[in-house]
Image (cartoon, rainbow over all chains, first blue to last red; front, side, top):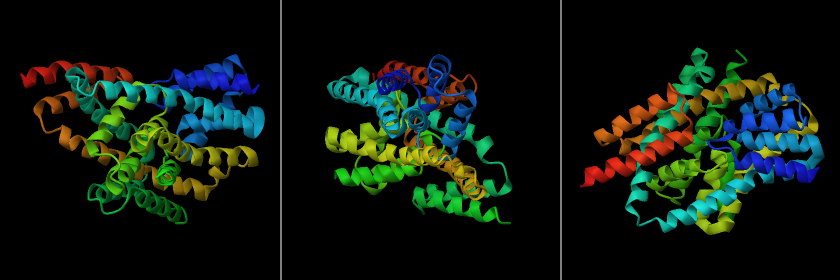
Length: 173
Length: 176
């Protein structure tokens, strides 16, 4: 069982480009439809939990499924398996990038990716906005976070904590 | 050094609500502003190149940056640090089988965190862009990429490939 779990998550980790959300369809197929390790509604619960709690959605899903199937060691095995392909891939990538340090085409390509990444980060914020900024107080928190981080007045962790506390207190009103 | 990598990535991991991009502003603050482990430029390039290989953004960033700071042991320390908070939280939820995250106070706290996450991501995107958006060519490219990502929902890897190709041809020409 542990080996099967390991191989499944190894595969999921190795074939998802583009972040954790890209993993969800693969998890759905492998874990729910092929192996029947989870039900559809448990899967939705995991996604909801993963969105509510800190951490990459890929890790959250692997830990949860692993625990459900084989207890503590299951969660360790599944989490390791999903991280391992990244480890190998990034290590190879670093070696290749070092070799290409003086290659003009490679350096121009990396520079060309900068506008793409800028666009991706800004669009990530825009696509999170509708579900995150709903109430008027949310807008104030959003604007506050923008100003504080733009001016470097407060470190991001404290901005997040303060924003959470405001949200908590606002719940009592 | 390894301990410092571990503990700082643990902090980053503990505050990553809302996917990999949410982690970037916090991670940049630690690695670039507080610790000076990598330069701003290296950080932007890291965000690009790590998305060309499989894996979660948060995990890939930790491996890449950890390796840059302290080799393979650094990569292991950083990854353990950023993965452990979510591992422990999910384990707690799975073992106690309580849905304490549905507790209204916890939910209110996270509802307050979310708008700030959006603000932090937006500002980090604009700040990263500040240096990049100094040329007309780059402004044009960024607008085109934003359109491709937002409207046509082009896959991130394809978007990066377009970026790489355009960089290879356009920058070369503008230098000649």
